[in-house]
Amino acid sequence: MGLFPRRKGAPPPASGGKLGMFSGFAPPLQVVGFVATRAGDPERGPLVRMRSDDAVIRLVGDGELVRLLTPRRAELAVVAIDDALPRGGVVLRDVVGASPSELVRIVRLDTDAPARA
Image (cartoon, rainbow, N blue to C red; front, side, top):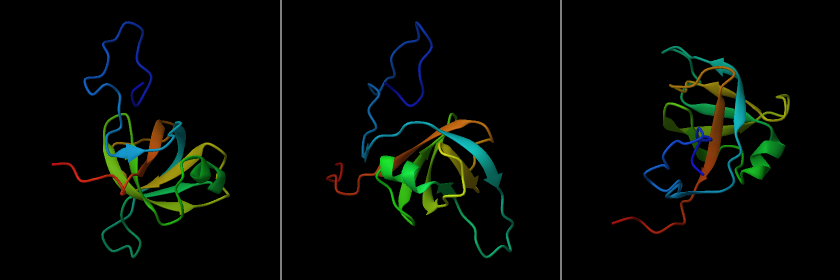
């Protein structure tokens, strides 16, 4: 199965649905908030805020670099743990290609995999 469920009768993904260098269980999460920063802000860059129990399911921790998969693109982001969020919800900061109420996936980077030639 690929990133998002396919429509009935749609052709299979060209890559066979594999995540390549990425591993882990990645059930979808709903974007419940979005923060956009300005050039002068001290805290900038792609960030994903999520609950600790959602992070444990995906084998990621606070401050870890993850792959954020949205319906339009994939991006690297840092994880921040925030237990004030609802279960299954995330708040994104400075992530291009994601909108509130969309479903996204967070995949742990597999840094132990051998380098590709």
